[in-house]
Structures are given as structure tokens and as C-alpha cells.
Image 1: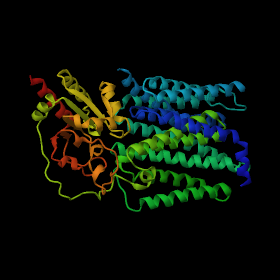
Image 2: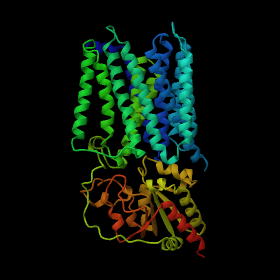
Image 3: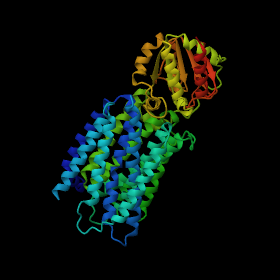
Image 4: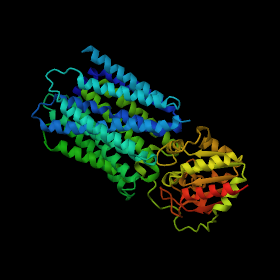
Length: 101
Length: 458
């Protein structure tokens, strides 16, 4: 329990930031018109691919003989990139259709 | 080192501005590009920021990125607009899987000095990422028709039991990290199974809500991974997606008049305890000819699109019909139910693809206000969103959900392939109402038939 409290204390700035960001997310979305729900979901889905950074950092720091890390890490990089690139590309395709008007 | 942090901040701000602009129609496209550039910047920093004693392994990283980018671009170019919900679900699953990969690797690195907070965060990331991963795959399977709805009365109890079990195992593992070597694997498998059993019993009508929820979960997994890596972009980007996803999920629940809890626990839409067997009377059929004449001489026509329009690829024909009617002085509008189709706003995307003017798309509320002025209401492949049992049958599973009240119009014509039930499997008394005429057949063929008939009138 004490350890947990220490963890909270060390990361107090993080936690504050977290709360503000959660609120920001709520605020940004609560006014969005229905017409944009699908592109927005698709776009924010692409943003969640940011998790790829973790995979990149892992592969970078793996020693050459550590095949397990390299293999799982590269799979992570591939999957994350599909999420990011595909997500933004398909969102752009959708929004291009709105733009024609 | 400081300039790295500074660049990360720039990319976070870009993500933030991007998301903000994405949520307003005029700037949405720009917003997506800004978010994409923020993402690119963050990835570049993570690749090139100096790390002491790092092996870099650039070959593997660039190889992985190249493969992933090609696959992602291929999917996004190939997909039909009707299949967007499936694709978003699939992409989301990949994001979740990425979070699973990094949590596994982090857990493998744990030792005696690992803090409780770090291991707790990582295990929760593993759990949330796994649920997002397999849950999204099941949602993808359901939307593309590869997985059928199935549910038994015990599934909500099983899910409750299973989630408690997983969380219990995680708490046990965090407190006793060295006790059982295989426990992390059990937790991984258990979490993956929970993702499947969580989404499996949820019925068709609730799929949009589920996708949105799974999207939020991937965001939360990314945020947790951000805490593990002490990386602000991951944390803030993930939290933004998580919180905006949660609010979007709640907005959707609201437009269906359902609570999130009942969606998650209820398994709504796959049960058939409804009005099966009740005598509904006979349906009245109409012909392309009659419909064409009635539409030509109407003052106001309201079109209600649903998923059937997407399946029949009838949106372009709809636009043609709209065009020719407008030329002949008929006022044509589209009534858009917020959850028509398989995803909120799905109909807007399809109609935009067919070049229908934005100003002709009317929200449910306005549409219902204008309904009594409509001479003809043309229901194109919509079912549950126009089901009057939502208003007057307390036994119906969709009782209380706001619908487009087509029966307030003077005439209703329903384009439908046959008498099958909607995606949610609920009987629709609208089809048996004496105001309603059914025009059976493929929606696109029917509309094109109406179109050529109208061209021959005057």
C-alpha cells in the first residue's frame, strides 16, 4: 500500500495532467455533430495508434541476441503502423467526400 | 535532451489541435492531417531521439513501419464506404494488439526491484489492450457477417465472473510477482478470452456503441503504456482518445435511449422474445409505377436511409431520384437517424459519397417536426430506426429508443428485400400498418425503376 502511495506521489504531475486531459477530451467531443461521428471515431482510432512509440522504443533498446523482444516488438510496430497509417488514410478518404460540396 | 521533450510537446499539441478540428465539419479534413503530422513527428522523435547504449535496430524498425504502412494504405484504399465500420474495428484491434505486444515485453523485463505502480499499470494495460484486441476482432466479424449473433442466458453471469477472475488474478500477480511463473500467461489468455466473451453476446443494434467503447479502450491502453514509458505523447494522446471515446459512446447510448450498462450486460438485439407469432395482419404491396406517380405529384418527399441502402449500394440512385424530383419542383429531404447503419453518422458518409447536399440531411428531431408536412416518406432499407414499437410497445426490446416517426407522414413506402427482420431481429409493425405500402425488391433496382418511370411522366 505504501509503495502505491509513493507511486502516486512521484507521479502527481502526471495525474493532474491526466485529469485535465480527460476533461479536454470530454469538452472537445461533446459538441460534435452526428454527421462527423464516423470520421471522428476513425480519426481518434488512428490517434490511439500512438502506442506504437512503445514498440519502437522496445525494439531500439533490444540487444541483438534478444530475438523474442525483436520479434514481438516488430509485430507491435507493424500492427501499430497499420492502425496509424490506415486510420488516418481512411479518415482522409471519408472527409474528402464531405469536402466536395 | 531537452529539445526532445520540446519536440514531443509540439507533437502533443498537434494531436490536440487535430482532434479539435476533426470535430467541426468545416475543418475536419485539415484536423485529420494535423493529427497525422503530429503522429508522424512523434514517431520520428521516438526513432531518432538519442538513447544511451541503444542498439537502435533501425533495419527492423523501418522494415516494420514499411510493412505496416503498406498494409494500412492498401486496406484504406480498397475499402468500400459501406465497410468503414468493420475497418475501423479491425484497425482498432491492431492498435490493441500493439499494446498487448509491448505489455508482454515489459512484463518479461520485470524483476524484484520493479515497483508496484509500474507492474500494476503494465498489467492493466495488458488486460485493456487484450480486451480491445479480441473484442474488436469479434465486432469486425459480426459487422462483416462472419460471426453470427449467439447468446445464452448465462453469458452476462459468465462475463461478470470472468472479469472478476481476471482482475483478481492481476491483483494476486502484482502482489506476489515471483510466486507462479505461468500466471502472467494465464492472465494474458484470460484477458483475450474476456474480449471475445464481452462482445460476443452483444447484438447487432448495439454494435456502433461497442466499437466506440473498444476505441476508447485502445486509447486507455495507450495512455497506460505512456505511464509505463514515462512518455507524454502516448499518455496524452491515449487519454484524449479514451475520454473522447467514452463521451462519444455515451452520446450514442443517449440517442438510443439506453444506458451503457444495459448495452454491456444486456446482450440486446439478439434475443427474439418479442412479438414473434403475433398476428400482424397482411402487408399491402405497391408497384414501382404507383410509387413513381405519387412521388412526382408530391410536394414534400422525405427519404429515410438505413443500412439496407448501403448494402444495395443505392445511395447514388437515391441522389439521382432526388435530383430529378427537385427539378420537377418536389422538395426532397433526407431524415437521418443518429444510429442508422452500423455506425453513427454512417448514412452521412454514404450520402456525401453520392454527392447529396449537406443541407438536405435533416436530424431526427427536425425531421420528426416536419414529418406531418411530408406527402411521402420513402424508407430505403431502414428498419429498427423507424420501428413504432419503440414508441408504443413497452414489451419491445427497443421501447424508449427515439425513432423517426414516419407514420406521421401522409403516406409511407418501404423499400425492402423481403419480410425479414432488421439487424436487431425485432419484428416491425410499421410494415403492417394501413398507411404503409411495401415495395419489395433490391432497393437500388426499385429506385432506378421509380426513376425511369418519373422520367416518362409529363
